[in-house]
Amino acid sequence: MTTTPASPPQVGMTLVHRRYVPYSHAHYAGNLVDGAYSLAAFGDVATEMCIRTDGDEGLFASYSDVQFSAPVRAGDCLEISCTLVRVGSRSREMDFSVHVVARGTPDRGASAAEVLDPPVVATTARGVVVVPERHDP
Image (cartoon, rainbow, N blue to C red; front, top):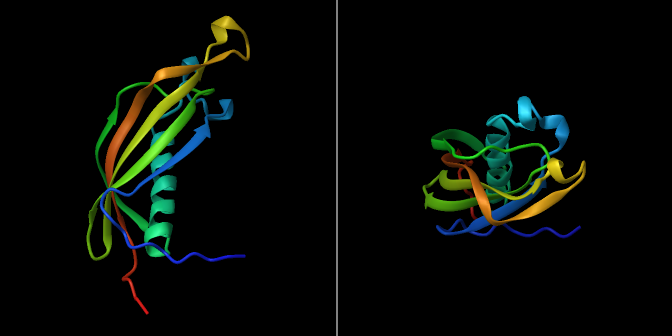
């Protein structure tokens, strides 16, 4: 196993996760997924950002300006991005977005799907994560 030391946090650093939304996560009619699904995805990408920058998973302190602008549905392929916009001594402020990059098209067949070009912005937010005090050797 190789270990990589954390990189110092820098404004502008961006991470991207991709995931498929399984039908088991559909919560509402029309196979809609609840908004908490996007927030959980933001938590996952923020966790990786903190691991990479601080060697710790960090703890989410707050969300602000959460906007749900388009539905997320079971069968969607999502791209979740996180960009570091402010670095404090222990806080990390990040901008988040969920883009739907592909979507099932059940009207064309049970397993039919299409790539969305351009992707649809489904959710955006800003969040603050707190990490332990950094102890440089």
